[in-house]
Image 1 (cartoon, rainbow, N blue to C red):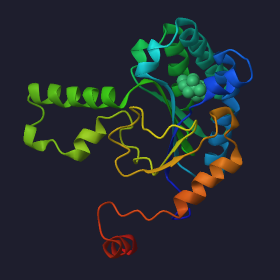
Image 2 (image 1 turned 90 degrees about the horizontal axis):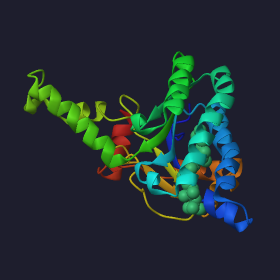
Image 3 (image 1 turned 120 degrees about the vertical axis):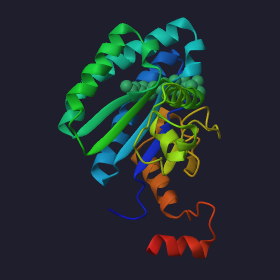
Image 4 (image 1 turned 135 degrees about the horizontal axis):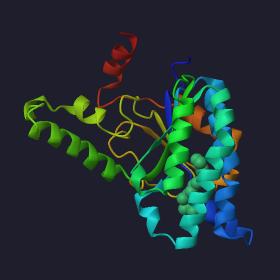
Amino acid sequence: MSATLPRHVAIIMDGNGRWAQQRGLARHAGHKAGIPAVRMCVEECVRRGIGALTLFAFSSENWRRPETEVSNLMTLFVDALEREVTDLHANGVRLAVIGDRHALSVRLQARVAEAEHHTAGNTRLRLQIAMSYGGRWDIVQAARKLAAAVASGALRTSDIDEARFAAGLALGELPDPDLFIRTGGEHRISNFLLWNLAYTELWFTDLLWPDFGVAAFESALACFAGRERRYGLTAAQQREADSA
Ligand code: FPP
């Protein structure tokens, strides 16, 4: 694997609504048109040996969208999971949903559980779909786990460190994303993976999500390969750390 290839890519798939509106279509048509771009990213990660991909499909805040848009999106997720799980499995993809899954419909929760179970043994690509997910929610739920462990006497406050805290987050033992991609022209994190993006390289494009194709994905990877990552060290210190 190339040293300049990200191990983990995280994506905010923005711009579906505008893509549809530009064509005089309902917003839902834009979400549906975004599915091939999801498939492309999964295929490219598998093909290139990128081990983890995390996609922001539905945020904690998206529940406040119009009721029909929310219910259409939930139906789209159910259908997409049903349709794609066989191909995902055949390609060695292990799927997991991160987020407050109890907020999802019972039907969607069942599809998620089936898809996770079906693909649990796969190792080529770890695919996380964030649904009803928020970075602040994630930090709070991790803090609650630690608080419960302290309250029960299983953990001392002084044992809490960054590694132990991170282990309780939704991404668990996965490496932090190396590359973050956001389509749709906005330059913000929007409550995605707040803890895990601390040292992630950020890449933004004005392309709307349904228009995000292989060439754009390649541009993001090429840009990432040219970045100097220093994690707070000097360039000389980082070179030494890289060669150790
Ligand atoms: C943001 O665009 C996109 C979403 C809220 C939904 C994204 C979902 C998909 C592409 C389907 C993925 C399905 C699976 C199973 C992974 P927006 O509506 O905020 O666009 P706008 O900014 O133009 O309004």
